[in-house]
Amino acid sequence: MPEPVIEIENLNFSYPDGREVLKNIHLTVFRGETLAIIGPNGAGKSTLLLHLNGILHENGSVRILGETLNDRNLRRIRARVGLIFQNPDDQLFCPLVYDDVAFGPLNLGYSPSKVREKVEKALAEVGMSGFEQRAPHHLSLGEKKRIAIATVLSMDPEILAFDEPTSNLDPRARWLLINLLKRLPATKIIATHDLEMVRLLCERTVVIDKGQILADGPTDSILNNLELLRTAGLAA
Image (cartoon, rainbow, N blue to C red):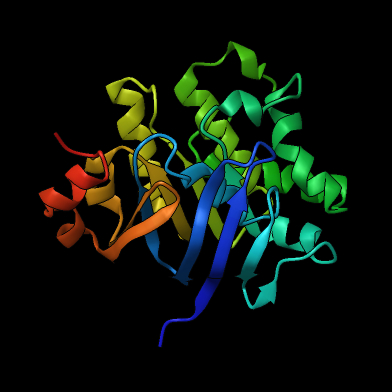
């Protein structure tokens, strides 16, 4: 049996204004999977991802790599679950690329030489070697997105969660990113509207709408179900 690395049971979440965003979510993700979460804007995809490393938490149980997420293990779990935001400017806040990618390893207490090793390895993985002394705000959107991924890879996470990774990219940058995601060996959860990418990368797809899971199954079966996609606002 494949090993479960994420186990979510009866997860509910409402924002302070009372708007219910997640309703009774049950989801298991297995080691090595590349799982897509698809749904219209406002369906709850991003909110669900934010529960995977404790940025948000409310009612329900979230187990990551066998541990129930709580305040005591939050720091450890955040090093094992890398969350990559839709907008890389939300992730890049240092004057130099090196500093952004080094931030996580430094906070984990690594020595300066180990930090350099982690930065070089992470940048090489995303095809951005040599950008260490560049200013992130001078980079293209595609370059920023790859640097944002490197900031997470530098901590050697076992799980990667991506929020709309290909949004707003030109065709060349989009394909570069898709090929990068294909190469990454970690367990991957990808929240997206990009159904072509889903078909290429994800063996399993979850459909979410109005905070509820409508379907969970093999990607080809989900994407060939036009009635389901129409119900979820993903097809005309």
